[in-house]
Each structure stands twice: as structure tokens, then as C-alpha cells.
Length: 341
Image (cartoon, rainbow, N blue to C red):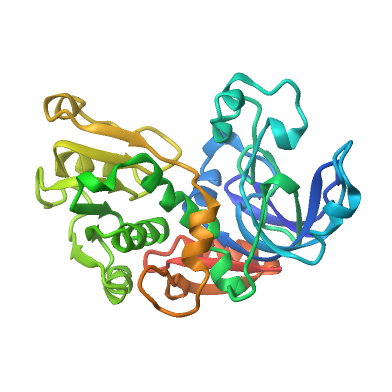
């Protein structure tokens, strides 16, 4: 198969064998894959990953292998199904017994022995095929096209905020950043009933949010942003940059909640005293539930409570042009870039 492989700070195309199928896993033909900021940070050294990146995908199951003691017929029921997949491969998917202490506590996305698709120890979706455990897969409803389904993983990450924060205590929220994940977060919070303002530095990206009914504010300076202090009960930092955290702390109201979504290679410098003085609750937020995300995507109609991510798509590249796609994804006015094997 053709795959894109991390080579220094860039991607290089390479012919590789199909992923080896182990018991309990499925071979998935990738139909579309999305490039996200984490993939770009991997090329800057994040997690020191070597292999094929990519963790946002929609695909089709072409082969399965039942786990020991399980029915092969049931496993074969996945063949031909369009699927999306959770990216954390845990003790259950790895067939490890007894499970680690974290898995026993129910926090499987933090499994002590996990592999993460395209990020830690497992080749990802920037290829013609990938392999994942059957327990990681979710069926895609027939009425959800590929270009919508490919957003299931980042939308699930946005939905994680709903699991972590009691929105009944919030009326107003700020989303700091105007990129791909920030756009989805703003929409999830808005359909959940909050009044949302997105702060960003790119007028064209803010226009996409505005078209979806999100209030926006253009920030003209990259440093020392002129944004309101102590104004928001809930602030979600999704800039993807080290500078965003300090600004998010400034914007969070006393006794407010600050949700951190950015992952980047390197460190952020900040003063911590405002967190203490304002008694801010800081919440790290990563992967999220696929069920609510798929439900939000499961209609082509722009009805209340539905999210249509297609306006976020800037370009679609064939997999053979993956290096060019990565370069395009780093351009300032670009939102989502997709790869099509």
C-alpha cells in the first residue's frame, strides 16, 4: 500500500506492506483522512513519533480476525461497513490481561499501555489502509457522507467538554482560536445552548464561524491580544500555540472554568498567580465520546441540534500528494485539508 511516513520535519511517500491483522482487529481501507494540528506538531517533534501519522478518518472494513473465544461470523459482520474509529488502543484492544490500573478505573483513554493511532506506537490514517481493534470501531449511518463522517474524531473531542463541564452553570463561553478544532467546539457549545464568542486572528476563518451563527471577534495582534478581562464563565483555549494559555487565563472570570485543548511541541510560559487569585478551574481535555458526535452528524439537514462541518473543508488532496497537503494545511487562511487514498 501507499503510505505517508514522517521523515524529519516532513512527510515522505513510501510503499509499505498491509498492516498485519491480529486477533480482534480489523483491516480498514481509508476513504478519507483529515489533517489536524496534532499532525503538524508531530512534524515539529511532538511525541517523537516515527511512522505514518493521521488519526481522523472514515473507512471501510475489508477484513477481520476474531478474538480467541469469539465468533468469526460476528467479526465478519463488520466487513463492508463504513466506520470511524477511536484512536486510543487500550488493554482491551491489545488483549492484555489483567488490564492496567487505569483501565480498571474506567479511564481507558489514559490506559498505561495504550497505543494511539498515528501518534504513539501505531501507524495511522495517512495511508491506503490501517488496522484497529474491532472494539474501537463505530458504524457510520448511511445518511452521513464521507466528507461529514471524517470529522467524527475531532467532533468527539469537542463533545468531551460536555462530559467535563456542567454547562448549566454557564451562560456565556469564549472559544480562543479560529482553527479546525475551535470551529467544532464553538458549534458544540452553541447547540448546547450557550452564547458563544469566538476570538481569532483570521477574518476568513471567523467568517465561516459567523455563517454558522457564532459571534466572532477579530484580534488584530498575535501578541498582547486586546480581549476582555474576566469576561467569560467558560473559556476554551484552542489556539494551538503557547501564547494562547496566558490570554485564556486573563479572559476567564473569577470562579470560571478554563478548558485546555491545545497540544503543541514545546512549553508555554505563564504566571500562575491569576489561576489562584481568581480561583479558576483548569480542565485538560483530549479525546471524547463518539456516540454524541455521530448523532450530531447524522443528518444532512441544517436542523437545530445538528452540525454540518463541510464548510470547514478547504481542500482535498490525493494521498500521493500528502507532502503538498501538509504544506497547504499550514497556510494561515486554511481550515481542514483532507487526504483521499
